Length: 209
Image 1 (cartoon, rainbow, N blue to C red):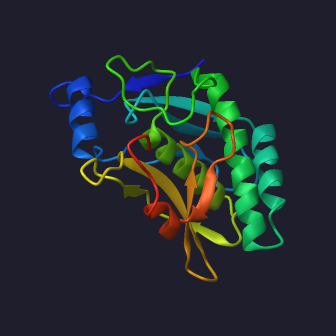
Image 2: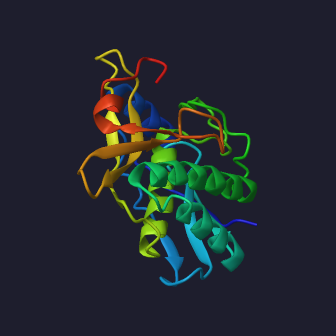
Image 3: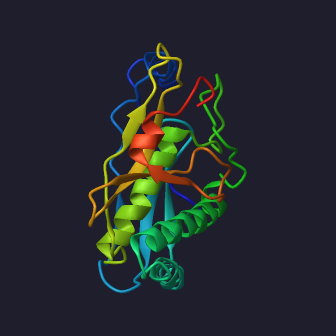
């Protein structure tokens, strides 16, 4: 069972979401949040965004066993930065499976965008970027990232440039300084996210995302 809170929006969530979509901007994202002991594989609770623009934030709980699983997934990338990025992909898929079961978002499709009546089961790119960043910060707080630090959420597209506004989580390679995106919006729930250089991602996109 999850605990969900609605984010109040000036003028109403629907009106603001429409304004944001046409302006190509999002409201200030809700800061990724989790509560956990910062050692070992102690249980953790995170806030998981859904419903478009992080308008819903449900608590998702990970047991000690879950956290041991996450630790093992990330440890499988210990050989190199490239291996760690592949492990982050697997961790994100695992994270979405667990969270989907607890929040009713398991059937979330690829490239969900705002609808007049957006179901709470849908996750847009703002939600996805916040959720992936939450996962990455949780992993970093446990010391489970060896080759990357957690980056800021990046954006592209402004409609007038022929591209739908889009957000993504990022990581930075500690050896090279290169920034990579972790973009889980492009595929359905628990499918592999796009992990590619930010410089490449910035040049992509279209009116369908």
